[in-house]
Length: 307
Ligand SMILES: Nc1ncnc2c1ncn2[C@@H]1O[C@H](COP(=O)(O)OP(=O)(O)OP(=O)(O)O)[C@@H](O)[C@H]1O
Image 1: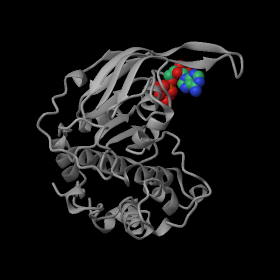
Image 2: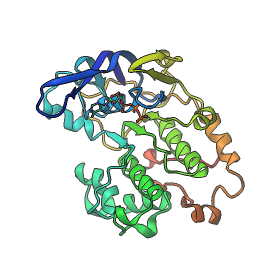
Image 3: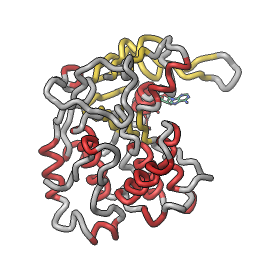
């Protein structure tokens, strides 16, 4: 669950060491997203979308109010308590944030290594993910040797390889063509169907129309229209076992997934056309099959394109 309560956020202003603060980038933002929900985060440039996501993945804390993520109230939490929660969050940054001196493989492997997964099992998981995003052949490439779209796909593979309980994505389709964007969304919806809470900030209205889901709309740092996001009913969805068993204290039971868009995913799959899998795709970057089982069988991702 993600909960914002009367959140205000101010960035330091007036330059370094001046001690002054700018105007509030977020003002009285209040909402709650149940575990397992899928939410669009909408708003014009500068409205505060990235700021909301930074609070969600614990890169920032609110200057007032409370932000609760995966059971942790972050506003006054001890620093040491943030790290284990961060490890359960996948982040797709607007500017990718790949480590330029690590290969594509090592970038994707990072969350698994941080979680202490043995190298032997880790190799298969990373290769699986690289295959899925169509970049298995570029495993040894350094990020500066990859195109913008390829870097974005590596960033996406890194964000989802450890099956996070919460995935936040900041304009994840910005460098992808329409076909790749639809496939990415199908993957995110499939992860969501399995129980991951997903929040996607975007300007892409076509994508939002294609994958309808509750949305949060920001205007000048204020929540404008909750569009039902406050009232998501998460009761019916299956529990998400999660790639890393959550620490016992971290999450109330009953974590549930809301499949608000499985029909949209399916129809998108068919809309992708007869070449949605197979050779046609590898030319465009994404290959079939989508991720084969990673980890225990019950944690497998189903093929989002199998209708
Ligand atoms: N590091 C920062 N320091 C100072 N002000 C910032 C910082 N980051 C964002 N802001 C300000 O906070 C406000 C919200 O910015 P934010 O990046 O959250 O918007 P956004 O909706 O994500 O925009 P975009 O779609 O262009 O990425 C803006 O007024 C911006 O100038």
